[in-house]
Image (cartoon, rainbow, N blue to C red; front, side, top):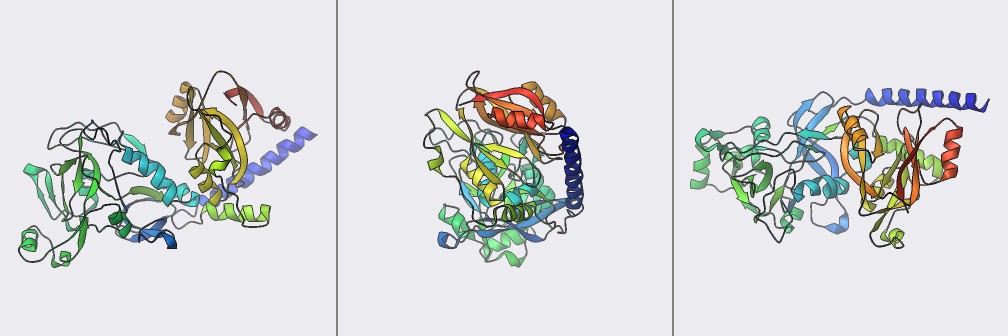
Length: 430
């Protein structure tokens, strides 16, 4: 009788989740048009830290069904392309540079709430070489946030003049001001002059509107004359394969990304609503460094979270990522376990269709999931061949949150009793 009741409850849950998925999927039509300026996320811009972050303005470059390609209207920050003070002349590409990591971690978690992150579409970017210098590009990359390539700039912006023999040109649409915060971080800005200076560009199709506009240098992700350099956009809108610099020059950053369903109700709002109903208040408890003070050297604390909307459990060793989840309405369930900093990798994968994550030490399982359409999110943490076991369980009735991991034998046994399938030991922790 207990088993029958459990199956009935699972079926009801399945129907509710599917119904909610249908509601959300039918509210994701993208309303903006190419050329529109929209706001999405927040980042420090006016350089007044006392008044908090400001909404980020984005230019819509392209619309494809329910998703849009957007790039920041302004240069938002000034960051090293590759943060290596000892050797700025090492060979580096977009795939391996520290700026890519900064955009997909530091900027991503600083600028976007969990509600925003749900709307960001991870994208497979092609990273072709430099056709002027005949420099090879790098492997294609999966990015949540990225920089535009030269070819993408040519595709999405009007080029006033293009010089084929130099594989470079000019576009007044590329003249981009920098925020006061970016200028504080050493972004270089110059004002477009009149007179003979303007006359040069007028012959190349510029209108008088550019006179007096501020322009800044900003990176592309296209490799330069060699793998020790990168192409960039000039303050006057100059752009191309010949225009490149070595990594000693620190330039501005215009983040670019794909978003979907901008006019739909955010999942985060519903998550917060659920949390208010369950907790009776808006007060939230955040993770701090004090929560890790008892972690032994060479280990990291893994935190456990629960999404009351889709029943997914999520695990992370990042305090920043954890607090972002809390802001979005996820319930922090405390410490999950302690993992070693060295050892066998545990991979994290994301299913963009179901909206949940999976964790595994198996490279074969990881490969199979990637081939089935899951996004590879890299190494989540590490494990050894001994310690306290993390049990892996599977819910055959779940649409999302189908797997669960726990060190508790009691929790494991309770889940098995209500229909979950025990799949053995996933990995080990302390």
